[in-house]
Length: 188
Image (cartoon, rainbow, N blue to C red; front, side, top):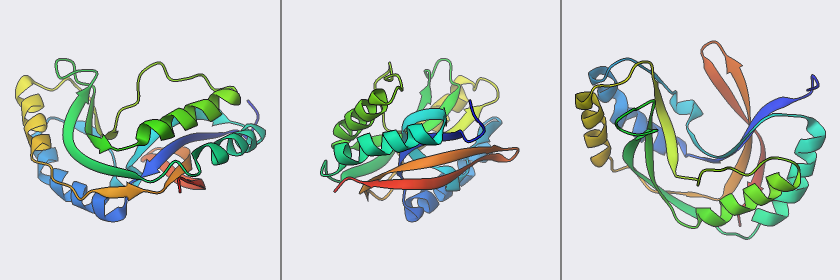
C-alpha cells in the first residue's frame, strides 16, 4: 500500500439535531451500564460500506462508477427507534441504535455494485440500519442488556431524510477516529 492511501468508508449522514437528541437520550443511560467505549456524537453515521485503505486512483474509479449509479435513486427517509446488540444479546460486543430506512436497499445495491467493479469484495452479511453507540469492554450482565434494550424501546427520535451518500476518510487518533467528508454523491 502506498503512502497516498487513505482509510475510507461510504455512509449516510445523521443530521446534527438528531445527533443532539440521541446524545441527550443516552446521557443518563451511560452511567447506569457497565463500562464501555462509547462513540462520540460527531462521529455518528450509518455506514453503507467500509472500504479500508484505498489509493487515490481507486477512489477516482469508484467515484466514476458510483455517482451515476445512485443519482436518481431517491431520498431515503430514516427513523432511528430501537436498540440492539451484536453479535447477540446473549454475547454482546457492540451496542447499537437502529430503525428503518425506506428504499435504502437500492442504495446499498448501487454502492456494492460500484465497489465490486473497482475491486472491493461484496459484503457477505445483509446490510442493516445501525449506528454504533458503544463497544463493550466486558460482557454485560443480563440485567444491563435488558436495561439497554428497554431504553431502546423508549426511543422516539425525529425522523430525517438522507439525500446523499458521503465518502468519509477515517483518521485513527488516540481519542478515537476522526471522520472527514471527502465527497458527496446525490441520491436525487
